[in-house]
Structure formats: C-alpha cells, structure tokens
Image (cartoon, rainbow, N blue to C red; front, side):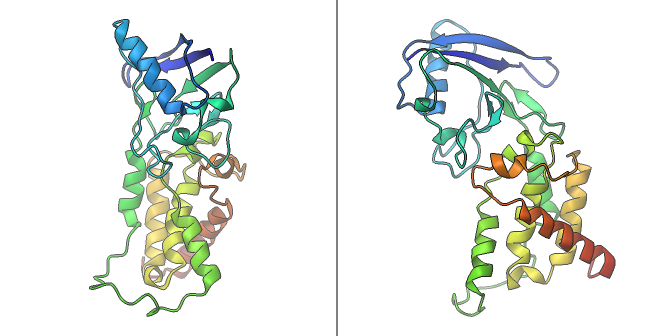
Length: 250
C-alpha cells in the first residue's frame, strides 16, 4: 500500500520546525507504525537525508517511549494502544498520515518527534515513592487488602508515563499522570503513611513544571493507552484538599 506522510521535522529546541512530505510505496498492512517509520528512515538514509528522530524501546506497549500524535490523536486512531501497537492495517491505501510530537510547554521538543519528558521524572522524584526501609519482602498475605482496592491500585499502576495524557489535553495538563502515581500508593497501606506529604509535593511539582490545569475535558483518559480512568484525578484532588486542610505531616 502507498502511504503519504507529513512528518514534523525540527532540528532542535530553537528551530521553528515544519511538516515535511514523504511517500512510501511498499508499506505492508502487517507493519507496525514504528516499523513503517523504520522503512521511511532507511529510504531517507539512502537518499542522504537525515532520518526522522523518534523514541522507541520495548515496542510491546510497556515502556511508553513511543510518543507521537498521529492525525491529531495521541498514539493514533485506536484506543487502548501505544504507537508501537498500532499497525498500518488501520490505514487505507493512499491515505495521508500526519505525525507530530507531543505539544506542551513542559515537554520541549528535542528533535523531530522526540520531546523531553523529564518533567515526569521530577514529579516522581518529588514524592512518588515510599521512604521507609521495608527490609526483606513480606509474605503476600501479611497486609490484608480487599480485592476491589487492590484492583484499583493496579489500575493506577498501569500508567507507563508515555505523556499521551499531556499531548491530548487542550490545557497540556499532567493531572492524569500525577493522579495515577499518587493513587497507586495512597490506596495501599504501605503508601498511606506518607500520603499527605506525597500528594502535596507531587501536585506542587506538577504545577511548577508548567503543566496546565485540569478542566475535566477527559481527553487524557480517552488517549491513555492503558485506559486509566479520569476518576483518579478526582481522588488526587480529594487527597490534596484533605492534606492541605489537615496540615498532616507536610
């Protein structure tokens, strides 16, 4: 099949960038989207043109590295999938596909489709951990946890930090990412001892990084490859309000 591509090319953070047009005539419907970009890069290298820079790692939907907007949608037209899980059979012969990086002040473009997502790392460093020395792993049944709570914590923990929530949100909010990281620990007894301190520090770090506010639009949850519920944002806000009002151990 033939695919017409419009790919964002940007040399660095100072470059204004632009969309460049390419055509591939040998795209297999069984190729993944990233394999199609590999074919494009092989073509560009043969033509002595700099290949398109993009992030990828596991290519199994686990690491969250593959981050780009495809025809205006984070990770492309399929729901519940990362870019590496999208196959070219999702497109038709002759289609034009526009590929761009995440657009957010807190995610500056490094080059082409690569953005700097270290703001997420700094949010985690602000409090997304337990500081207690836990020693050897206890038996699984040492802490009794109701199944519905354990399932909810696991749902939050599926966040792979890809940044699709930020890229899809008109406000470039990181609330879904931060809420998932806050909730996965606040729901379990091991994380509750530092819950108040954690949520305040992580929310304040999120705001300091320049992400926008959440206005309950819901694009973040729709774009999330792990389909994390927007309800976790409500939980984060409740946890934050409770911590501020109580003074807690902040």
